[in-house]
Each structure stands twice: as C-alpha cells, then as structure tokens.
Length: 120
Length: 190
Image (cartoon, rainbow over all chains, first blue to last red):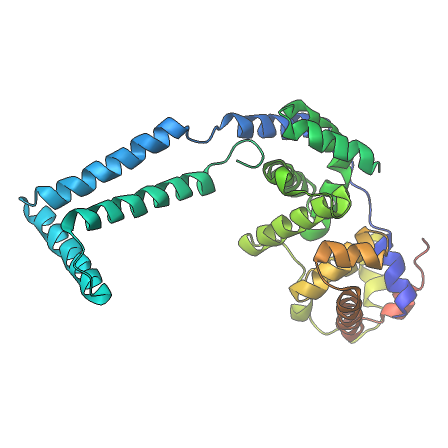
C-alpha cells in the first residue's frame, strides 16, 4: 500500500454530528458535578475531632479485647518509635503526634477526593 | 476555532460563572465526539466518552495555565480519558491478526463495499500498540499537523514522527499480509 493511500483513507473519516441533546446533557452533567460540593471546613474539623476522639478512646480506655489489642499494637508502635529515636518522648506527645498526623491525613484525603468546582 | 473565546470562557468559569462552560461545550462537542469515535467506532459510546471528557475538563479547568492552546490542552485530557476508557472496556476492535489469511487477493473487492473496506482499515488502527495507535489517530484527527500531534501526545516532535512512521509501517504490514491492498486502496477517491 502506498503511504498516500493510507493517508487518504485515514483522513477521510466520516464526521459524526453531535445529537441534538448532547450539549444539554453534557451541561447537565457539569452542573450536577458542580453541585457535589466538597466537604466544608467544619465537616473536616468534625471528622478530625472524631478521629482524635476515637484515638483517645483506644488509648485511654483499653478495656474491651479488641480495643486492648489495638492499644497494645499502637503502644508497641509508639514504643518502637521512641526506641528508634532514642528519645524519651512523653506519652501525651506521642498521642498528640498521632492525632496531628491523622488530622493532616484526613484533611489531605478530603481535599484530594472531593469533586466539585474546578480546582477543588 | 477561537482560542481567545476559549480563554474568556475559562476565565469566566474559574470566576464562578459555571454556565460559561456551555460555550466550550458548544464549540468543541463535534471534535471531542469525533476523536472518541476514532477510539471506539461506535457513535453512542463516543457521545458518552465525550460527555465524560467534558466533565473531566471542567474539573481540571484550573490546571490550564495557557502554556499551550486551549484545544491542545483539552485534547490531551480527552486522549488520556479515552485511553483509559478503551483499556477498561472491551471494544469491538477488529482483531486483524486473527483474521484468516486470504489466498485470493481480490477478497476485499468481492466481499465488501468500498466504504466497508475503508472502515475495516480504520478499525485496524485500533489493533496497533497503544503509542502507535494514539499517534496515528491524533495525527490524522488533527489533519496531519505533526507539531500539534506531538503537543497532544506530550512528546517531542521527533518522537511523534518516529511513532507515526513505525505505526504506519506496522499497519501497512498487517494489511498487506491479508489482502492485496494496493489494488483495493487505489480505487479510493477522496
């Protein structure tokens, strides 16, 4: 096959005319998209608060078996972190650190996953 | 197409006038549907893909910094979306390699009409490795503008040229293996 022949065929593609409702449907989807607002700052704070609360519950009230296991695990991780850093970090400092990391993670995930207006 | 009008609409959308996006949809609906069609060869599916592309473009609008023409940026986003679309879904792509070897060189003339022959050849593009397939689709879609093809693909012009060359070579081999294409193609009057 000559290159020109191939060019002719691939250039002579039939043109699809959009259906009448295409633009309307596309805009309806765009509008629906922009109504899906990202979580407000308050809801992010609330989520962060709940996370801290859950963490504190696990940390302070390790009475139930599952919670106790979680407590042991998180405490072990904390202990390991302390041993690695060779610093005698206070218990409360570690708790605050975890809470801060968790909060940042939640905020970051909220911002990453939230659809909505351009750029949100 | 008027890049100034696109830029004006983008600015208005980013300032909160969501309906300004309608201008972009009206201006670019045809090209985006036609580009999608070249990837799926199905009109209804092409419209669905183009709608997805518009929503995607709307979401990413703040990422457009005007380094390239709006159309180039938009086609790049659409291309990425269409690629992932055809990766996810099994499209009725002609499996050229699976077709039986044709002993009689006049097979095409005897069995299919001229337009069907051409359509079969266009479908054969979809059986190429992705990079060559994309290069060929974009190159002919943008009416053989190599600079814009390279920009949309996000590669240097030399790379795009090499991909095109390789893709066309692969395509020609595939077609020549099956039929006496020169005779058949020679009749095409465009």
